Length: 169
Image (cartoon, rainbow, N blue to C red; front, side):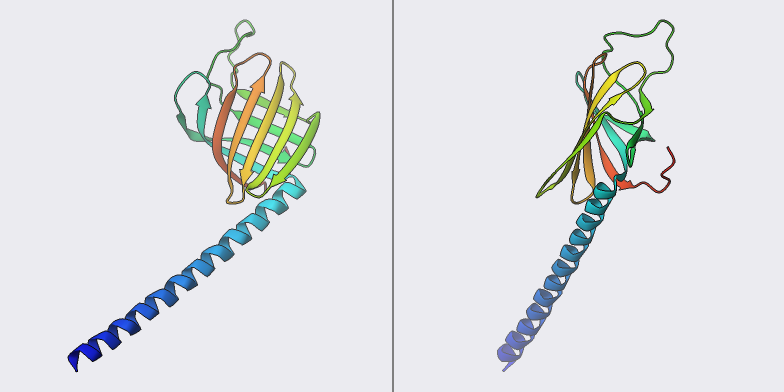
């Protein structure tokens, strides 16, 4: 008799555990779908803020960033304030302002979509350099930014994307 009660009790506990895990899976899937829809809306509206968390220079190891470095895409304009680690092929005499900084309208912006997310290609002519930027955004909100220029080695950044709240560059 004890065995029958023990088996019955075990069956009830296991069925509750399975039902609970299915509920958590459904909730997680709903959150993932909502996040993917939010990312798609941000890309469609071109209202994106990329926040760099890790810099990956071409000639060295990864550098974790402690300040907030961003690339903002607002409509037809792009504003970047990113650090630079690597070799500069040309530099102005007495230059103290390093990094990748510009506030320009890109020459072009092309958006590609696949099942994992979006890729945004753009080219920006800054006063002292020409930058080619590729921003790969996953449906989960993580992103990788690859920056190449004429006067410096390439560099990439890993981080997250957010909705750009203030559209004034």
